[in-house]
Image (cartoon, rainbow, N blue to C red):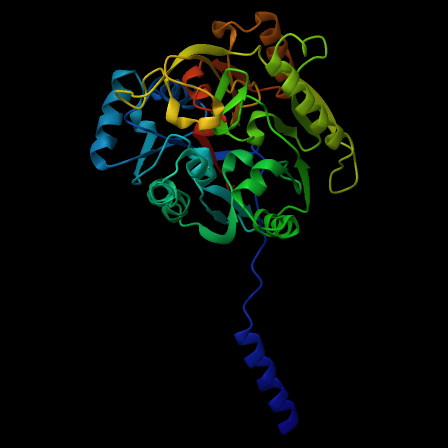
Length: 426
């Protein structure tokens, strides 16, 4: 009897001390129901109009949560939206210092589990791996290090704060990543861009990264793309000749997206157009390499994907001057000291600033798909008609709304970059 009692005591003690196994969290697909959509707001800068247009387009379909810098800016934004005919009673404002407009990237990546509980991933933040650019852009390494450290503080805590705001569990990780480079099908498959992922995690082995992404996002399989679009270079760089661009270095939401669990959309340049422009040729070569990877890929059950080639808009760019000094951050010129000395640019040169334009930088939420329009910027109307037809077939029952977001595109982003979905739990 004493032996039985002793064994029972040991079992009770072990059971008490052993934590209950937590339900697995996973990242839902974007087309699943959303509780709300988060949007970042910058009081200054060229982004008010596209953000306003996005909010107006979303409000009939989904509640909006806007992140603002302070209580004062909250009131300023609220009054501005009311002047623009927006019913702010349907919007919740959240004060989080040092927020920026690109909420997809530094904001929370939301997860759910089978118990209808919410979590967020607390990714490390590198400000798009800008340290590399700062280092080759200046001979003053100490100043570059200080600038980088200060820049990290400006947006690195927003994801955690969003999680705290929603009483969500925090899933910690040592991995650095932005939300714009995470593409999931909600059924265990994640698409990553190798170029971006390794640049953000220097010295970290790919095997470790793969294991960690599987753990934190609840996926079972990862498809590694090689390179993103040429017009989405890393930070600020020459692309080819006197074409220059601002970008992330290859976020997946510019060139490869899931339309459903078995359908992958890939940005594409038709062979008949590849020699029409140097940017076309670069993108054709890159996307052909990615296509070959996708054609060999399968889902978690070993089934091949349906791959749909989505035409890229015609290359969009504008002439700007190289300048040594600008009055404010948004002057329509390009500073010479943004580029390495061996780039060969000098003040007075004319360069062609390329927009990161892609129809795959769309956002899908309850009952609607928001897409960019490029006909006003000179891209082919016939090509955009193909996009309307294709997306109507891909997302039946959802309204398609096309928005002019060129000011975002010229800064390396788009509609998807300024929105972040909060999944529904019902």
